[in-house]
Length: 114
Length: 111
Image (tube, rainbow over all chains, first blue to last red; front, side, top):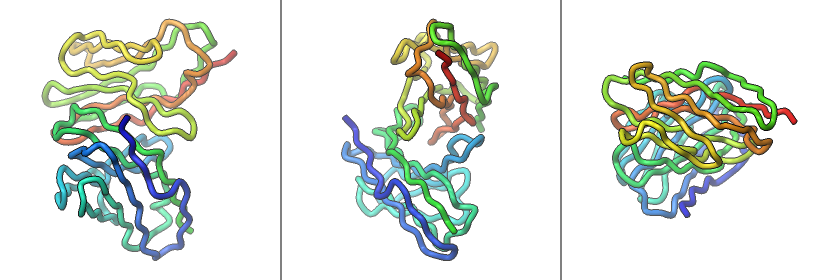
């Protein structure tokens, strides 16, 4: 079974702090994704990566950056957290490089920025 | 560009009655379409996937969906709802490199 793990289930940070969200997958998947989930908006893609050190912006990349130094690990960075970044953050991975591949999701990190 | 519209934000059914969750999509080419389910405090799980083979797709837990190109729809159905089906359901369309999610439909199942 594919396993996608996220470093924290719940996180509380203060405005202006630098925040790191970590995601690890154990199935040698090529693609990894970061989404945020907000009520009534579904999931929105922040960034994705199709290879080590490669990244592409999703639909809402402003205020975020990412890092993928190793194939199994994909980090989301909030350079200076703001209250409008309070949300549920979901990481996903998929095997190949086409969007038809099934994405496997982690349990999510609920981030609150005060 | 692609988009997906879930026509109902909330659906309430009685246990044992049919379920219909509606989804319309738009895409500039032949897309792949998915339904994902999210149970409370759990991660998203793939329910079923359409990738240009049979237009009627069967998924897990008795769910199925029919791809109708002429109507640009991909509605999710189940003949008989179970209490354990209560969850949020997302219709998803594939793009060139990534997926686009609908806003979700919360399914309530009344005893």
